[in-house]
Length: 77
Image (cartoon, rainbow, N blue to C red; front, side, top):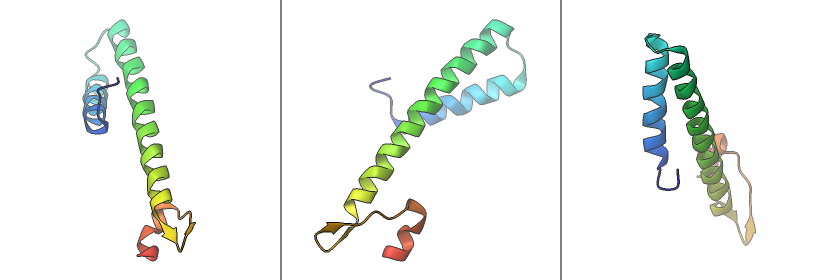
């Protein structure tokens, strides 16, 4: 998963969800897709956490770094 981007991982995850929702897979196939989906979901969550941490570091108040929750970004601008 080193070369995988967030966007590609999300796209693959959406495909897996669609496959699982159809219900046409064997139990073993469904389990394999589910496991891959969990890995992709964790990958995406980790990437989002990394981005959020970077955003928090970018927002500064004077020389002091001010942590602002992502949801309140518009209030800072």
